[in-house]
Figure 1: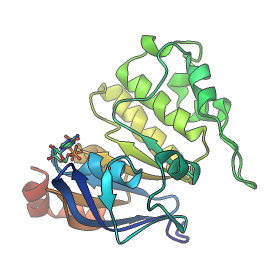
Figure 2: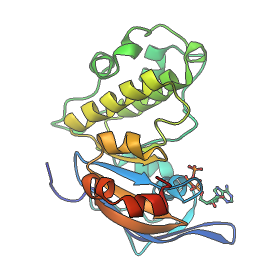
Figure 3: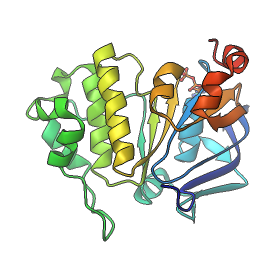
Length: 238
Ligand SMILES: Nc1ncnc2c1ncn2[C@@H]1O[C@H](COP(=O)(O)OP(=O)(O)OP(=O)(O)O)[C@@H](O)[C@H]1O
């Protein structure tokens, strides 16, 4: 399913005030790929996703999505290029129902592509289909996380950046989340996810990028990372 590179980031540096936290990271994402950014707490995973979306102060020698430069673009323009972003803190409207939340994310699909609809999303997230009239504030954290992803898909993105999708959610929902991510990939949506739980990441990702203290320590197939115990112990703690 490899075509032209979708997301191409080279030499990314990011700063909080004067403190530099990313030191020249490079990564790329091809259409329909699932790539996991893994690393310990504080390694720089969230910051990498935020920097790509223009949410933190950052520089790069090259940053493109579908060939468009991301440099100096505001976040909403980056999203409109077809790059969705699901932050850790679940952006859903708690007073609105599942269906209403999905409507708030609706954007026209590019010509020639079949748009996401609530019905199509409910096939991907069957548990959301069973609670379509429920308000956000009556859903568990994991269900809210799924709704947040589904709502982002309503914008018909080519790729989604997912920040810690398995964090703080019940094991049964983690399983559903893994299935939903596999199904998104099967539908052609590329995913770059940040994950502290590398075992979860290993089950769904094609490739892995290991970040340690703001630097890229490894990029390769998930199988290579799985096989390299010393690298995992050194950078991921197991
Ligand atoms: N708003 C902020 N202001 C200052 N420093 C920050 C801020 N957010 C994060 N940092 C620092 O930047 C570094 C990278 O943090 P980041 O959140 O990107 O790591 P992470 O790998 O995503 O970890 P986690 O799994 O805990 O989210 C850490 O040293 C963190 O303390």
